Image (cartoon, rainbow, N blue to C red; front, side, top):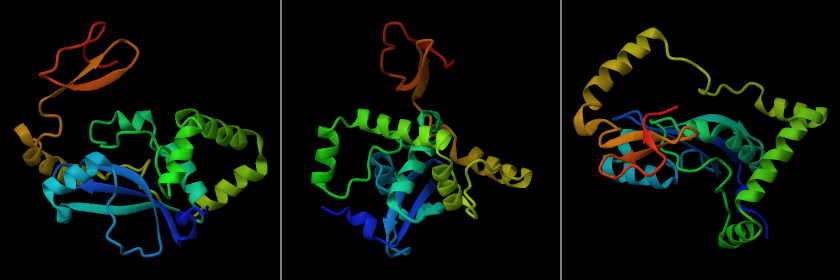
Amino acid sequence: MANLNELKKHHFLYKTTNLTNNQYYIGVHSTSNLKDGYLGSGKRLRYSVRKYGKDNFKMEILESFNDREDLIIREIEIVNKELINDPMCINLKPGGSGGFCNKEHGYNFHAAGGRAVRAMFRKIHFEKLKNDKEYREKISQKLKGLKPWLGKKHKESSKQIIGEKNSVHQKGEGNSQYGTCWITNGKENKKINKINPIPDEWKLGRI
């Protein structure tokens, strides 16, 4: 069965930002209509859109690709554990865990070992980047001329404007971290609700 997403014209990595609190979601989308109004499909993102309204969100295209396969590879690279640990990021899972064209595709993926398949896919990709010159050049050509926001920095004037907005929106319950705290076991960090008990072998703070 053909992947319906592969038949679509545009394949891109996007960033959707909540303009009221600057929380963001990064995902992938395949479409034949760039004006389809798509904001994202993440669980926390959908909840946030219902809470604040579509008008308070902005979706921007970070990178475009010729096919779905290379798009998913890029998602795996960008949406990693480091990004998910960013308090402003509302992605719940690393890249590559979604993108199924239908229920059968998703069932077959999970039946094949889900997480293990993604790990194998990442390993193959990075090994080919390291050892396969032709593959490396192919990826390089696809990324040429693209101008993603990731890796760039705000100008000082922009930082000041963002800071002024945050000083208003991030107070009390408006703060995205309200009611939560970070805990660590010395090896990894995670965020929990302050009303929840701290698990054994964990303590307040981050490494």
